[in-house]
Length: 280
Image (cartoon, rainbow, N blue to C red):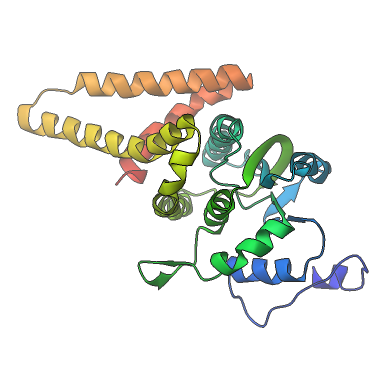
């Protein structure tokens, strides 16, 4: 990459002395930037030719501090797992983020392709760089934390569904579980840090954030209760099982209808992965 662009007058390559992590590399680039808007693109991500223009459209409102595009899996056809993750990304973008953007508060502008207002970033860098949690320096959750800081500073955060970015996703189960664990930790931690924002946001967003965080807990309690019933009474917990199956199929059917693709019915496979692997 350096060899390809070192002599291009439009490109400034910043070589840091060592691998200092995404956050410090990002900050080094932001401090050297000079445009009104900053686009962050992860190294495993390819963006469509019109991504910049579509995100810029969202940023024309000076109240918007950050905007993200729609994420897809560039390797979605490699395995059943990559296809499943691609559907998971579609749901996260076109249900969760699409609903949140109606209220100007996307709770996490995902890292592969967010655009930021540079003047807003410069206001927040001193808070963003030295993040600690329980007196230990943080080395994950850059995207969610920066989004929370944007909202805390009074900026809107938006989702642009037609700005498409394709990113490489894990094609094996163990790396996928590790990634999901890391993301779950960041979700719970930064939700705690951002709880005080909720009263000032729309009541739907409060319900959405509580649902995201309490949903897995309620599912875990239901699963444990079902196992306890099976172990202690020798009776099959039909009611619990049928409720989970019904909720899964409703969600997948709505997604298949909205996306116009029957493959979303296969997202039902995510439920056993969630219950038996992710929840534990």
